[in-house]
Image 1: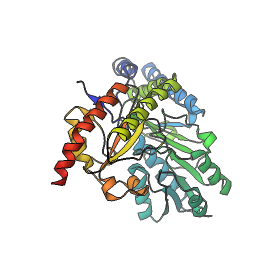
Image 2: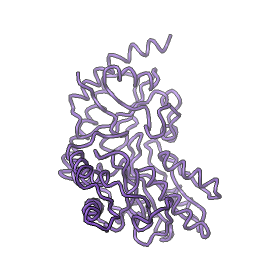
Image 3: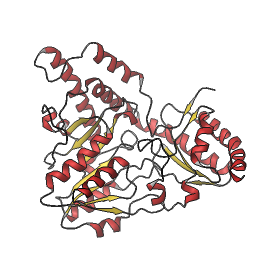
Image 4: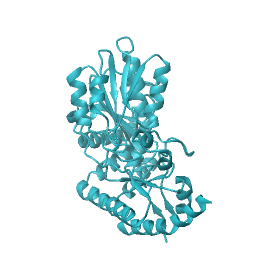
Length: 382
């Protein structure tokens, strides 16, 4: 049996066309885009073309796209850059209790710097409490940062409604949404959502690792967090990663080609997998949200890391949570946030699917689970 990779929420395999354009840049168009000669000009073309592709997918101006080293840097820039640019006027930030570590940890840093952060609760499906949001908004609220799609369970947040609530209360409040698990799976339109900033990572959409982007609405008050040679209008200094940017642009272009068909394929795999697990395996709980690519299942009676490694021995690769936090199992804020008790959140696996996966692979995974779980549960009870 060849390997089955169901950990696409952690990273994805690069598309062949992405590898090809990166090779082209590395071998032939290796100039520095800031150089004044033709090699620099040729390299800059790739940067500008990628901006145009991404901006078109978002329905925004290419001048509002800035490249980063990935989603973590994009989230850090959005949060810390906005906070420091506005600290004399406002110091209150609102977020949810199920955000990714690349949002939580910058906010923890900002709390140490004197900012106040309100963490909104979610319901049992992982959806942010909008009434709690309305009550949390204040005159000194600087920013609201709420993810679009949760990385662990696939809950889709009502970002358009959140944007309306925030801007109706005070148009000066900055609205940021982490779209790292949303871009490429959903249509992401920041202007429709009234979002001032969104963050995206390349390796979640079959692009390269080490590259991402942030959309920053023109006129948003924000300071850079990386200083240097004033590349990207001074917002993100450092020589642009042209091969990575070219690869990201190609991935963004391809992921939205025949998009509905791609998403229907991924959703078919997810729905088929969940249906078989729930009907054929006892003592399981489905925690999955509406995102097309993420299934979160609790398998009572066996610890998640034990089941993960048992599947790994059969070359089936899944996740026991967010791979971006660390490779050490930790208590999931998301699973606790949706009200799971310890016996459930310690036995939860995430299965995340991509365009490369098949229904047949889902069937093989289900059969492996049916074979492994009785044995592992007996062993656990001893």
